[in-house]
View 1 (cartoon, rainbow, N blue to C red):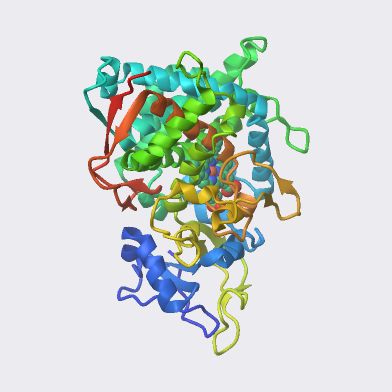
View 2 (cartoon, protein in one colour):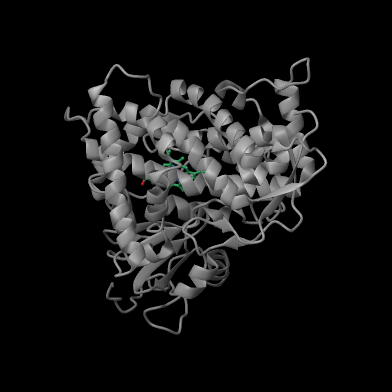
Length: 504
Ligand code: HEM
């Protein structure tokens, strides 16, 4: 627990609460969007709330994101905010368990492995996996029976989570992980994932069975990867691998040291956890919207036919280069990430007193606001992404807004320039303009996501492959957000109906 200091004149306004330690935890936990929007109206873009004994200062709007995500890492520190959640799951000596400077080198290694050559290899693998899944999974029985008149259904989250882990393991994680998915690996994943919840974020160690299962699974999974690495080292001339293990084995830190086996193992676990829920939630939301907007789903299908159609009516397979030329499909994913960015709160620990710029929050009558050392800051890009002052019909899922060259959406996509003024080309995908943008589903600044391009490749290829084979319908409204998971998921009911296409 943090001892909450009495309020000083320079402190930002504090959200009213009845219970001293609990503070606003229930309101924030049950509906963070309503909490942020109501407090923004009441107190402005900067306010502080109490979250189970922690003092958290929220900075909203694009300027608020800039304040938090563009701030110096010596002042706003990610390790301090996330290590209690991540170290027991990922393991030692990676990500937030090491000095930031070393983690930035590890991030570069991963980026290196997400090369164009590897991305090219991945598209076909993802298509194959989805094809096999549709041919074998019991939820797609009416598809398998070749029946074009019969509707089947599948749960948006369950089916998409399975397709996500199948495709991520075949590509990034490597064949050995893919081969073990039906065996021991999947139970280990489930146990480890049980340690990646809001409860674990708030209470890193409780004497509960799920915490013990998390710790046991972490150790076994770490050994599983180390075993793969040992075998590959014993057989260096074996098959060519396009996965991250192969790439990490070749990397060296600036001091010339190679990565140790357990570091590679723990980076692989971190990548698995970072990509699984974020990508599967984005997939589930996009599929739900497509199923409820058949006009858009038809447009995505027609785009496929136009671009990939053969004279005999069949559709040729996709390639990495092709994915850059499918603006309708691309806009569906961008628009989903605008309304349903998987991560609604980005946090940092405050390591020195930081003055809030007057352009972000009008100074208090006693002078400027100061975010005090040893507290936390939080920004929520989602609030700018659904702000009706920025986006026309902001609560409507409307992918067409991304194809308006003059619109806010197009402006938000201008290429990203990093803090050193270097232009970063993320290829295709929802590239936002940097730390001060109203569109940041992948964060911004030093801790920005490096998985964006892979996530786009994976999500777009999966959606296109499914839509080529089936039509979708949603018999219920698009669900509301469930905020009780770390990643924003759809609530029930979320069953999607499908029917096999005639010309498959
Ligand atoms: C960081 C979102 C997929 C790896 C982030 C951050 C966000 C984000 C918002 C910034 C967190 C912060 O500043 O505290 C997403 C979304 C995804 C996605 C929306 C999919 C739709 C992936 C995938 C991978 C990945 C597939 C791995 C292959 C990472 C890594 C970081 C990161 C390594 C850096 C963390 C740091 O520097 O502290 N992601 N992510 N993400 N993401 Fe992703």
